[in-house]
Image (cartoon, rainbow, N blue to C red):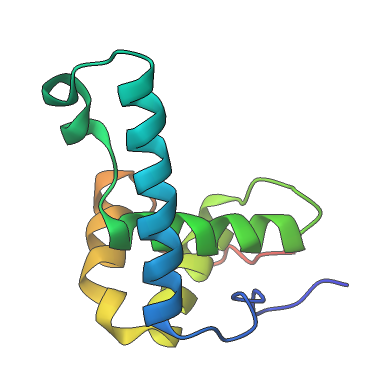
Length: 112
């Protein structure tokens, strides 16, 4: 059932989302260290805890839309909704929008 709002993990607090992201990052780091990788070589390429929170919330939105990758218009709306739901992530969301080239919807373009 399509919705204008993505189900953001059942309105979980940002602290819980950050704890989940921290645990995920710790697991990734542990696995890469066990594989013999040099932490100096990979640590900078890992997302920050808050970036991972945004990526997890974005993944939830994609999953709730039958796994379809979002159009640029929907991508903008999903990320904007994350910023509205979790105000401490607002600056990061806008930085990610700029970094990944996601643009605000242009006039006349409507999402289905």
